[in-house]
Structures are given as structure tokens and as C-alpha cells.
Image 1 (cartoon, rainbow, N blue to C red):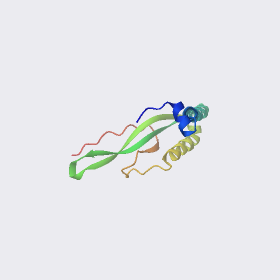
Image 2: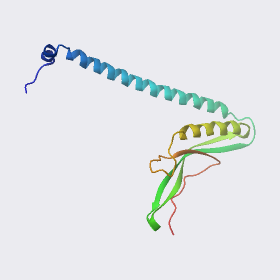
Image 3: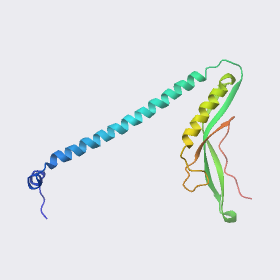
Image 4: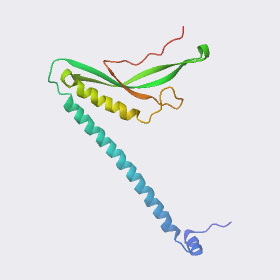
Length: 148
């Protein structure tokens, strides 16, 4: 088989291979630009949510309520007695809010939890990647339990 230049291929097949390659490159560039725009939109939405949250956190009353937003995963504990698993909580962020705004914050965080868990596989599934969880108070990372 001999190598043919794009011009020879175009003459042989009656199409312009160079134009097709340029069109493919343009399409790939448009796709990459669309992905960048989607990422920028997501970041902008997150920043808007952060600004809303900052307005919600303005102190107006004495008394503070703390929430912990985190992720729960089922992890392998060990081979003892046929193998065992445990649910591990990993805090992602702590929120401290005035008591007057606690209900609004609880509602906002529950929405965040529900949106993140929508369509997620349950913890007992092998394909589970974990679930979002919001708890009241300062919840710490779950230590790895030891079999005794």
C-alpha cells in the first residue's frame, strides 16, 4: 500500500479531505468550548450560592447553631468472621449560624443533601460512591473501628 497525500485522496474520492479534517477540528474546538462554558456556569452557580449563604450567616441574635455537611461511605472493616463493613462519615464543611437563621440553613443544607443523593446508589450497593449527609452539631470523622 502506498501513501497518498490528502490532495490525491481528494481527487480519487471526489471529496476534500483537508476540509473534512478542518471541520472535525472545529467541531472538537466547539465541544471543548461548550464544556468550558458549562464548567464556568457551574462555578458561577456555586459562587452565587456562597454569596446567598454569606448573607444568611449575618449574626442578628445571641445563640449559635452548628451543622456539619459531609459524606458517608461504607468501608471494609476487616476479614474477621467472614468480613465486616462500617459506615464512615467524612466532614466536608462546618457551618455555624445564628439561632435565628438555623431553620433557613437547615432547609438549605437538606436541599443540598437531597440534590446530591438524587439518583445515587444506596450505601449497601457495591457500586455506591457514598451519600451526602447533613447533621446538627460538630460531627467529626468516623474513626476506623477495631475488631475485638
